Length: 152
Image (tube, rainbow, N blue to C red):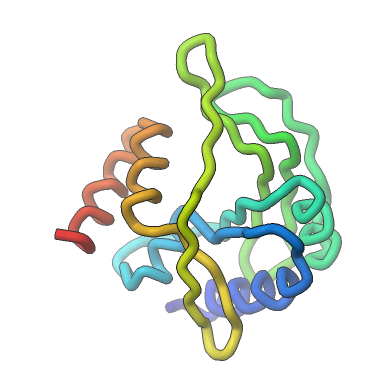
């Protein structure tokens, strides 16, 4: 695992210790935590509850970004912490556009993993696959193939 990703994950895990509701690392960073090392991870995506998103962003010296609610995704709270070893993006109440409707994107499962001694949480691989299918972009469908190899 590259040093910037490792250091960023540790920073997120340390900052998230006081969060009150469940939270997850997902996206490329979670794929790296599952053991896939042939992918480039440009940022760390975190999904959590709205009040926790604000607290996590504050702990990471990040800031809330106004979400225009356009395009494929929208969040009740979205923010970035760019001054970490790797960009951290925090979202709460994530929804995905499905035609004219919005579909909530959430996880039910939670698996604890560690980077050094720092606890982190990722969804079950199957739930992550379902999320990528919901997203439906070519890059997401390519990630589905990579993740399916882990459970084959």
